[in-house]
Image (cartoon, rainbow, N blue to C red; front, top):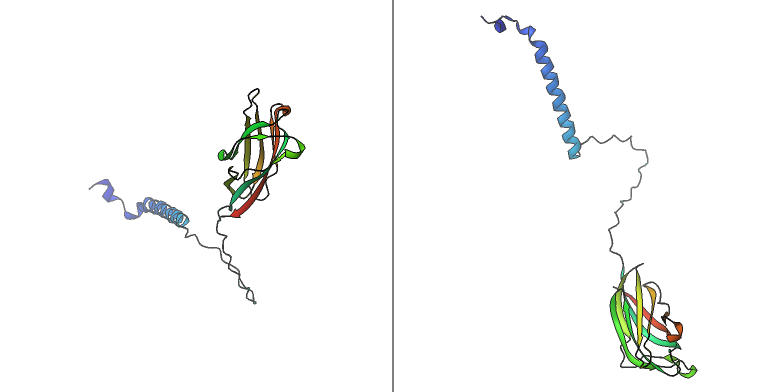
Length: 195
């Protein structure tokens, strides 16, 4: 007979019990990990309810909302001519843009800084309105670039202001590199409507 068969069964018990204990530890660890991953963890027990029931109000999570959007209509009301750039009248044209988008262009016309003619309103044929869309709290830069088309001297003027949906646009001061070459103040009306 072989040597293995001569050993009594109880001499092999310690090896079998060690293997069984190792198997049970591995199985318990696997079950706990699966429960933890699957959200099946035992919930902590709550203490006994008080004698008076507490009225629980259901709390609904706030639904995420998109930021409020507004359409802002800019309308040129008037141009105040501080200095037209020459002793007489000077022809200027202006381009108005907001947020990098062209809104409208005022064609060339004569401007005069005399007291009687220094306030100029857009002609009925001139485009003088533009529409932009803003999100609440967003700032948008409104830029105005002007060019004089004089025969003797040509000048360029520019100015900008910040537009917010919550408030009217401040007057925009448009000035040439040298203030004596041209200075204007543009006044806009703003109408804001929610989308």
